[in-house]
Image (cartoon, rainbow, N blue to C red):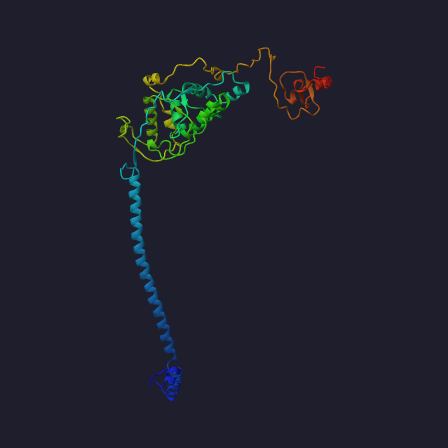
Length: 398
């Protein structure tokens, strides 16, 4: 008879009910017999069986771990070898890694088709504008440069001159690098910083010393979008000016040559000249760490300068006052210590309106140098005619 029968088997007629009950009672009797004879042996057998199952699982996990570790180690070795090969090729010049583009020359414009104009700076700027210009010692160089070049507005399909090209022309014409304001004991500025200073000074002249509104438009930001230096293989944006500068072909090629050098092209590849067949590197140009390149720039040769130089117009503004220590409309204090003429500061001292000591004229003195220490000084030149009569009795001179 089949043991451990179930109710479904009894209902289907496979096993009789009396046989199932007999088997169940036999199982109970067998359990009682085990409890009387060898119960400890059964418990020990069950414990060893469970421990053997756990040991089998442990060995399986160990083998799986070893296999996975071997596979992972192989993958890591392959990845490290790939990284090492990539590092090696970074410092090698390989045509498969470096992207190349064709150099595109700028077609020389027809002189009869365009009208070029020279910037006319204000001949007699105001004293305030002159004082602002005295802040930067290199403004005279920028002013001379702006009066040397000839400009025109770009057409719809033309890019304007970039600030990089204008700065290069400024340096190639023999002008010095802009001097940053502040202390002299600083790190040498990068090419990007020098271009920013040059841009700031050019806009200062355009804002303060160009009376003609039509010429101010020439020094505003260019409106065309895109890569202005893509013809040289440079694939990043450079700010443009809303003008084009008249250049001879030799000067244009020298400017392109300097830009190609700073972009990583080797001099030996450019020795044969710039032509349409020349292959140049294609990529982004960064000017953050190019201070040495900006300092090594040399001026044009005499042959190129002769073609570039234009006769000076009689209306050219004299900028010699920028190099002078005193402005033309200022009077220097005589040796005797008495000032012949002195300007009055429009901003009074914050203590001038608390029990002042009035003085007729002269330089403003500090509060500690007043006739009565601790009392501020009120200058008569700061008062109207009515107030001068009202406070005349307070005058320090009696």
